[in-house]
Length: 140
Image (cartoon, rainbow, N blue to C red; front, top):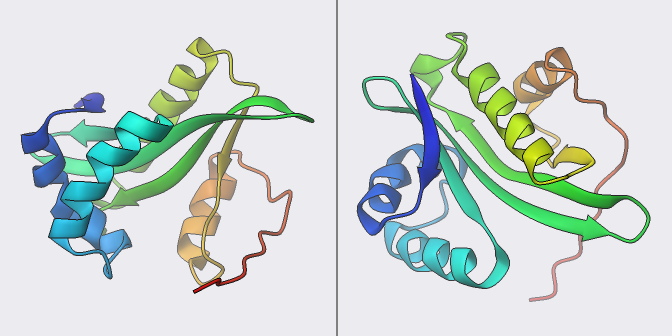
């Protein structure tokens, strides 16, 4: 098992299939344009777990809030359904937490859709607390 940042075009392209399981409305074309742009402009990074293929994937970004200091936000976290309950999500989350500590982040954050109850149970088992409600407003 190996965990590393995915930074090259070929790796980003290869990650699309797994990411599309979490973000099914995102086309390959839009994904391949957005990821490098986000990496260049906002510090977005892809992290992949390889074990005979890409098994788990995360999109992360470091931010800072006035009231809470530096934090690492997990924007996407996905493991293929056939690969769940094999420890891949746990290993990737632990790697991300360790990386956040090296970056002097005080907190690890993740926003998850209200319908993803299985994921919520996983996050709770991993020691994450539900501490806020997330509100949004479509502007289009």
